[in-house]
Length: 184
Image (tube, rainbow, N blue to C red; front, top):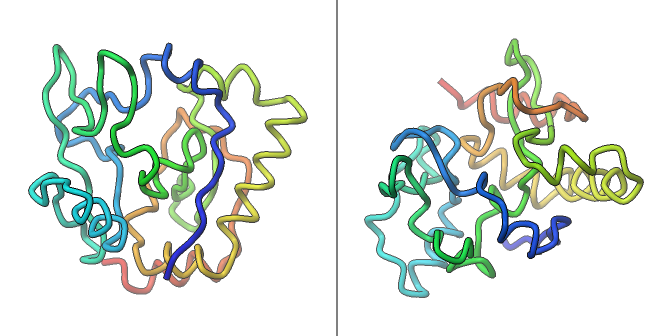
């Protein structure tokens, strides 16, 4: 199953001058990108080393292994000198969504969509009409049948609640139940 890509609302020049994305404080950060098996196999077929990935609990997706850089850790596809992604055209849904994030709400009763307030662009443009329109586009995209099936099958794409994320939307219980049933 293939899904089309989301367009990125954040202008490239803003991303290239930012120091938030693709950088992590811990080597085993739960925020490191998750790849579905299809996404992983696609980038491997493009020459990516298969050892860059570690299996997730859903046994269908993999998280990228971060590498040390200065006093933090980075995605191995991130070039810190240019702030560019070497697999940008083939980046996973997890990265395509950013600064939006899929996660459980605080009591894990629902899957929600929020905006990571650590993203300076998201925080600065949150209330604009353009950003709100894009938010609706992301909701519609995620709620499409193909993407919902992909998320349900790869439930490790749903992160744990983060207090730095402002929640904007709660998905229907169908998605929550689909991922809760196989989730240990």
